[in-house]
Image 1 (cartoon, rainbow, N blue to C red):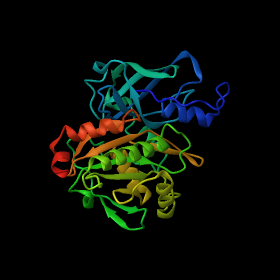
Image 2 (spheres, helix red, strand yellow; image 1 turned 90 degrees about the vertical axis):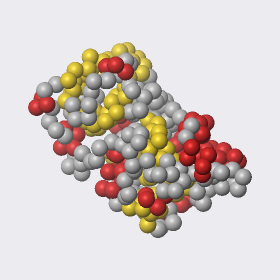
Image 3 (cartoon, rainbow, N blue to C red; image 1 turned 30 degrees about the horizontal axis):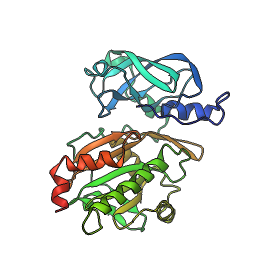
Image 4 (cartoon, rainbow, N blue to C red; image 1 turned 135 degrees about the vertical axis):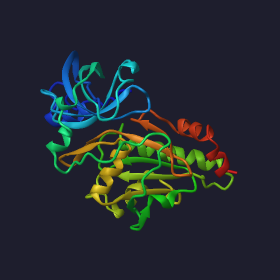
Length: 302
């Protein structure tokens, strides 16, 4: 799945725009096919069987070392890979599409252990990326109401969690995630006899320095969120980064903006992941269907 945003200056994009475009697979400014050689280490996988998350070194002429997801056109190309494998591949860009091919495993000592984190000492390798069936960590967050939240406190009913930041300028990213949460909340409210959906929503800010509880509360109010079943959270920057990376969300600062990818997860009432959607290509219907495909929603809604 490729994400596309219109460039403000397609003829002459700034270096910052190029970096953001690379991380988010936004390549609308590229009219002819280009290819880049990439080396790195596998950090995790998407749930679509075609996405591999790689902690890579500098890609000359495109972007510095970082952690980001790449999509293979053929799922079999990454089927044999495992987390921690050293790999090389070619990254191809054409129009608004990006894909990788010619994927090869390398000897373990061919790639440094953490090329991206060595570029920025504040970025630690973090915990392993969570997958369906895994229990979510019990981390301590700070809510929009300026109260402490332990993730374990949310067990007992399904939870839908995503990652945003309030200053995000790209309509296809954080604003879209929030809008889709509003739609989902309204749909579930309309289906509930009590008018209160038996599902909780959690939006975690990737920008804790700016997104204080007051900022989050204002953002939630302007978005039309019902805070009786929706929590906006911030917290210690190291905790937020670790939590985000466990859900496969990687980000770095570019001035006042954050370059990041997207991940939304459905958690069961037992605190275990049922489904993870990478990117923005999901709808309220997708989440409702995932809820109905399990007994957790029917039990909670009975």
